Length: 206
Image 1: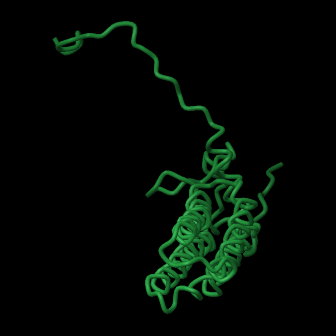
Image 2: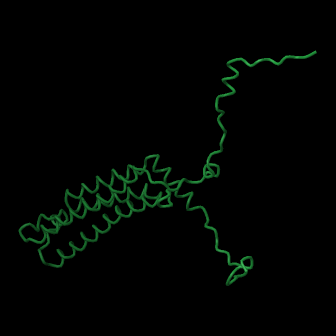
Image 3: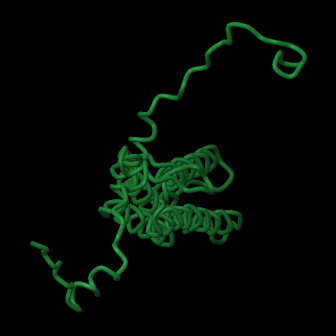
């Protein structure tokens, strides 16, 4: 007895003619859980907020430098020397004597310490140093101490450094630091000295 096949209906024909989605695997980097690197720098991709954090620390360095320059300009004139800095007001040294010269050296060294700390934090955060999340607050404390003995203008730099350090606490920055830690943890492939070196044309080309 001959059996007649069932004729497919319209719904079946539509399903058969529709393009079928091909299942694909994710990129090899995702399969291996690799850190996505920037094709331009070869380093972890830097988030936009990191730009702001680093720039704020650099601006803090500039603000502290301007505050010291204002002090230096006032200290260079005898009529304004007495009020050029709070440290000068507290000690009231005679201009040109050893104490006034010593205080100028102390203020200059304090500028290098406070501004240098903010600059280092800004650069090392850019380079993926996770320690900058607490190191930034050390820089803020150094800047605040410097502003106390210098003038109110220096507090602008302290505020800039504080905002920049607060940005380093954001979760996106934390993920960026973890990516850098993962990249640095990967050991580079060591160099292997070849067993033999062939000079001239290879044998298959002779």
